[in-house]
Image 1 (cartoon, helix red, strand yellow):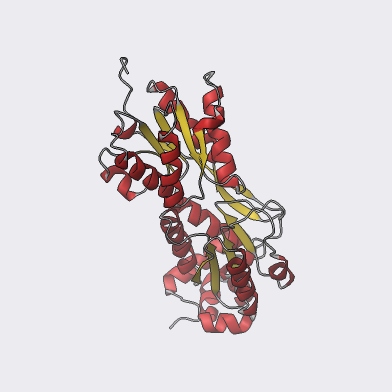
Image 2 (tube, rainbow, N blue to C red):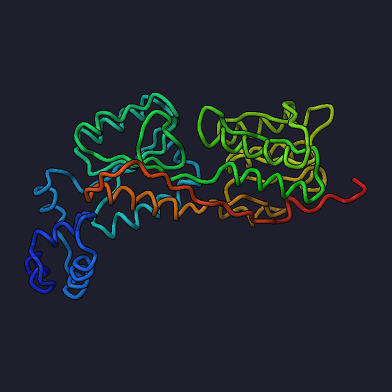
Length: 336
């Protein structure tokens, strides 16, 4: 079995340089990095996680703290994180904060107690999340999906506002004018930004932003069901609806069906999040897709660079969305 000394000998560098490359130290000359990685591949060298933990006095485990384990959005994201982590000899501990400040705080404390190598956090709340204990002991944190308003940390986000505006633009082009929105909670950045994009989409075509056509949920299915029931009970119901996440879309579709209405004949639907079952629904669901796997890989790469010694200012990565047009938003008949 090859050792770190074998790698150093083949690459023509010191063992210290090999160690820095393995730990993703940003200060290593790129040519040396290439030589070391080539030697690692030629020798099929696999660093010992136990030895590395003893050497650094830090585990090779990352905590990934998410808001709701039932949300399919996180599945591909976690796959992206895990692929990068595993390739670099790290393991994951998945923590479901369940939109609880207490659970979120307990998991952050666990990361400190276990001296974890890093933390990836999908914060449930924009304010009040205290990561100072991690900073004090040098555990890097990267946030994903949502912003921490009062913290300067690396973050990976989606163009939520642009995606929502694209959804409304599509519905307008299909002939719909009374377009409703089932929004997420505006206390969190994703809810706030998607609602802002919805409003932008309306005003860009001279449509009035009617507060009566906006209902608020918590990104969970039951809230989408309730919000859609309220919209359908209006004296003048909407002819189309933009729903701000996948689980609320399921709830909204359930309410439409219970009311005896058909999509898109009676009401068109566009959801935010493109997941596997969207094309399997009848009719297939038009969605705003997020590059969830890439969200995970980009987040993991930012964390790796911090672990490797990067000390620059907080980085903000924003990834684009994609409109997937399907039958749920078919063009409105001119006579309707």
